[in-house]
Length: 76
Image (cartoon, rainbow, N blue to C red; front, top):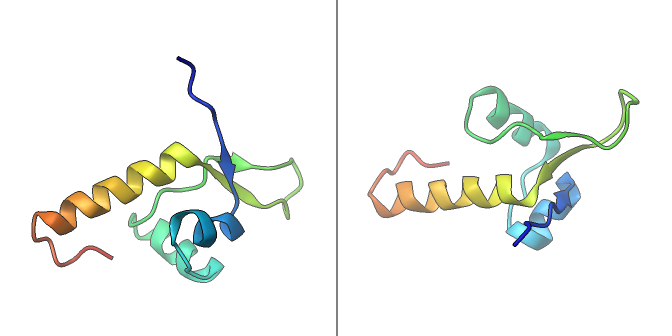
């Protein structure tokens, strides 16, 4: 069965996935390797918003939950 590729913008992260971080905090976490980098931009313009595929964010949340369940208190 084909997987649907749903694109999430930063504004979608809070209502759909519970991630309420600011644009700056997301940027810092990406730079630190603590959050997945965007999968792309919505257009070619430099000011176009970034997007993540929903499965990218789901994979991040599953890994975060697994680390937390294993007692890794350094999960952010």
